[in-house]
Image (cartoon, rainbow, N blue to C red; front, side, top):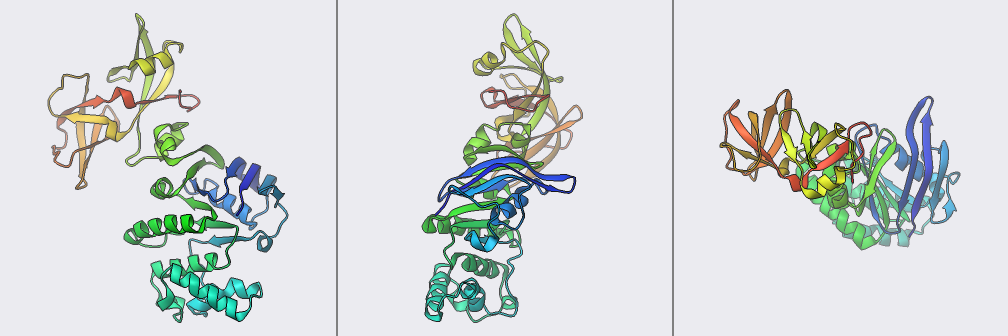
Length: 364
């Protein structure tokens, strides 16, 4: 197996900087996820690791070997694409066997390896079929088998589940997790789907505009986002943001959010005591950390108006309007309300996130 290291890697396409000074250290046998929106540079980063794109600046290492000028076929990586990329004129057996034939394996070893891989992915019964006879999930398994069969040092996955239906995607996530742990192969997985990243990755690198915003274990990214982008990108529904200014009155630390003031708990107050009065901040609160009431509660609260109610069976998402802004609250499945009904919202002060408005960085 192998570790993969990127040092100040940059990729330019003309005047466009697709990847900008990326530093990553993927551990041996790790399941590492590159997560971000379309156009953030994650697939370009993966292509440079594979050797499909040249590096404009910086270095890529497999263990301690510099691979910038090593051609793709010499890097011993296997890539699974979003489009499956199966050969339509070949049956499943020949699609899986293709990389072995290119490397001049003998016929008996090819048969043995293809059979073992097909058994691992439960597709033995498909070996004689052509790709056009397969479902999306079956095509995905064949693409995985073709990558696995030659036992590469690194697996590279470029949004491999995006072309299969939502129900099957749930099961394929679990299968990929188990497969990677069984094979113990270093894996780099690109996705825009935060659920895939959170459930599959040992660690996640969140990217935006060609840069790495944060690298951490999935729950660390969720609980301690490094900046406003990560905070807004991770979590379903996304985090609510309130523009706020710092108010210090007789030593008491509060946030003035315009339509309400929030007294902070001691942990957050201590964090802000050295910050100048009037400083511009952003208060972040996840929808699960807001409470909603039809009668004014005993705890500090602020008024809001029901904008929409989204029942989901196990929970209900309530969109509330405060001034010109809409915020999301997750509450119990039995909650009902009329549009424009007045409600009261309580913030769980222990669970808030604070960000500097100018830099976007989390205050910690």
